[in-house]
Amino acid sequence: MPLTDWLSHITRATGIEASALEDPVVLEDAVADLWLSGALLNGADLCALAAPPTLAEPCVRFCGLLWSRCLASWGDLTSWGADLPREPGGADPAAPAIGVPLSLAREIAHTQGGRLPRLAEWEAAVVASAPGNHGLKWGGPSAAGVFPAARSGILDGWGNAWEWTEEGVAVGGSFASPPHPAPVTSARLTSFRIVR
Image (tube, rainbow, N blue to C red; front, side):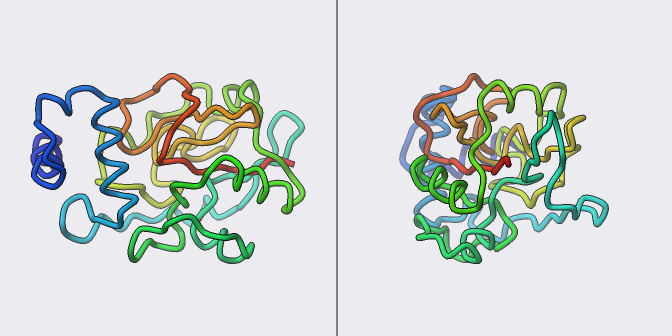
């Protein structure tokens, strides 16, 4: 679906004027409201994309740490027995868990024997990676591995969901962000990965 169609749909669904949606902060907040309420952004099934089988390894070693290759998924949160934040209706268990508060991300990482990556570690891991899922390209988060991996082997460093770091800043942007946004201290479309 072209970006203009996405913007028209968001305008109809939220009542926010299209001109206001030109501000990336307003656009991402409107998308967060829709997505976290369980509303499908296009009113139909989202694209079902899957990772190639060669990307099935769950972890990758980079800079002396063992990294979760992908963002934590809804299925991961369920298997870890985590108290789930509000899950969009019918979310794919393989899709990134979105809307995870920083405190819950830290708690889960700790109980899984790890921690969140530090900002400098994250930056090193995703340097020169592809832009990923930004600008409502797929209408919502895509399955991990649809976009090329960074040289580190890390998937989805840019796009899909903001990713929490140990310092409490979110990095990478979401599916509703412009490509390569600056880190923020407050984001709603957040997920995380674990390093050990």
